[in-house]
Image (cartoon, rainbow, N blue to C red; front, side, top):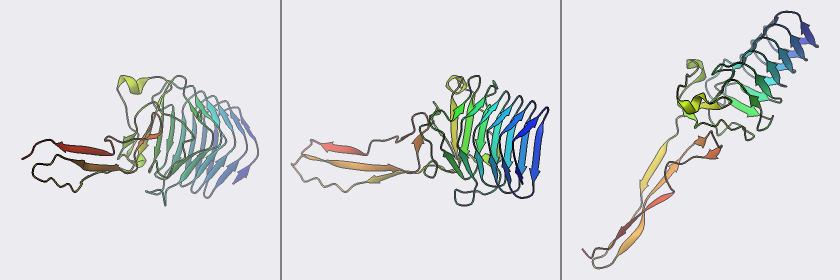
Length: 231
């Protein structure tokens, strides 16, 4: 269903059996949009909570909420069949919750709003997706290491450490579990000759440091083995 600008003195609620395409929304209460397929929402301003819940894709022009913000794609289990959540504008929540802003999909997170795309000046945020390999971050840094092997549909994660509680920081939570491969390299040592060479090589797939958005490796590329014995 399509709609122009919406101004509501209380809650603003829309339900669609197919798609929702909306212009700007200004609500003195909560905003709740639910669609079986996709949601394409203009900028939303709310004195309460904002919830956009779709079966597949969600596109947001940005939002400002006194309460929490939820963008939730509920269908699919991989980047191939899950929903794409696209941010074309900044999501700002004034909530003091650890889940002030939650962007959740089993598919792809597509940030087109830049390095300040999510703002939680009094709380924290969480972004769930399938894998960093298929996501677009645009330098939106979480300030925390990414979490792995947790699906969005299994439920929201709770974090308790001091670092996790730092106001304004967030978390990237990915469904994939990175694999570390360690391989022993061929090496030959002759009697009486010092042997040195690459002992093992390592590789890590689909791994990113969510705090800096750099590829993250727990090892160096190779470890050397050196022998000074003549035996």
